[in-house]
Length: 230
Image: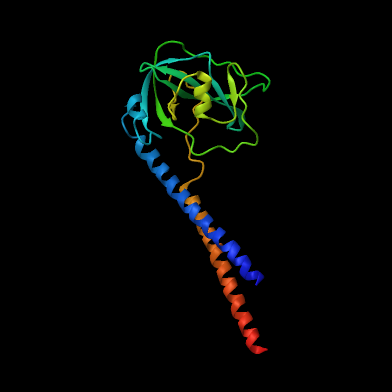
């Protein structure tokens, strides 16, 4: 009886986890395919990217000016073993749209002092590709942003960023190409977990469910034989 209850409670969980990993596999596969195919496209304009249903990885150009006095430092970013920040800065396009620009990684240095950033205040033409975070980040505590600039943040929150600069921004940002005006250390864009990994995890969950069923069947057969032998 206890074994039956254990199987009833555990089997649906194992199967659900397997199907969840399959869905993650499909999502990551689409991301990988988009990353490969879209980087070969000719750059679009900002308005066209804004109207695209799924702008992630679309290359585009934008012209306008950085806001040199306001920027965000995404904390806990590591490059080649060194701790630092990912630098995000608002950019006012010639279309009158505020856009967040990922200028790349900078070293943290003294944690008591935020790094100073040098910014060209002139009119610029930037090239990069669109990106936005996939899902909500895991945070150990609430991400409280202090008054003043720059702001050291623990996660990108499009709504909070729009509130901070007092203007609505697109839900995606531009990742600069290396060598663009204002680009710092541009780290290679990598997908955190390859699609094949999720497929492997799904196989493991389904295999565990199958083993559980086989063990349960074996125990039921053995119990039935013992009952007939009594």
